[in-house]
Image (cartoon, rainbow, N blue to C red):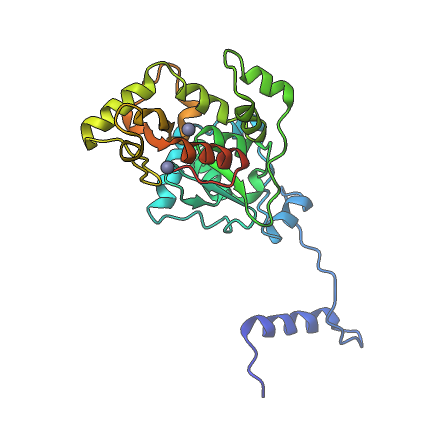
Length: 278
Ligand SMILES: [Zn+2]
Ligand SMILES: [Zn+2]
């Protein structure tokens, strides 16, 4: 005799009961289940475990602030997880320190805090131009496509022009900006009067010499102390700089001394979305 698990036994009993008085031994029957107060669509959602999750309206998604996103990043970096969301196959969202996170996990956690709900992938869309990506990038994360992701779309030239108000980029800078308009505010800030001079002075005071923090090139050795400063530039390495509140005072820690070569290459990579800002 086969020992059926209880559910199987119950099912057999049910089938037998339904077939009573007929010669049928068929197991397939339609069961009419009444669910007063709950629509058939909703029942279906529950059975299919969708739980009635629908895309949240933009007004709800926009309740996610930079602070929520920063908290989500902190949680993920300190070993927490967003288990409702699968690891990303298509995109990485890089933190200030160059650590890749799954954009949907970050936004999902931020959404949970913002709305006090349990967030699921069905609540929002991911991808270029979606609110989730816009807010993640506004909060300072840099999103780059992985192998299966879609390349960042070319920005609208009109929007680029608007972003250039009060700033005249070099031809090379313009090509970077066309690759990634976010870089405009970065370039603008780096050009702030006196900023580079101030940083170089602070760097000299600390290290007693100037060198590239990336490739360690020491221009003093090569060009002598008078001309050395000419090839050490100042790079703003805090990615959230683009969205700092107006009036934010750039701290010297936000800046990095780079040789002209490293700086140029870094900007180009940032524009192409192939570098992680460090
Ligand atoms: Zn260098
Ligand atoms: Zn720079």
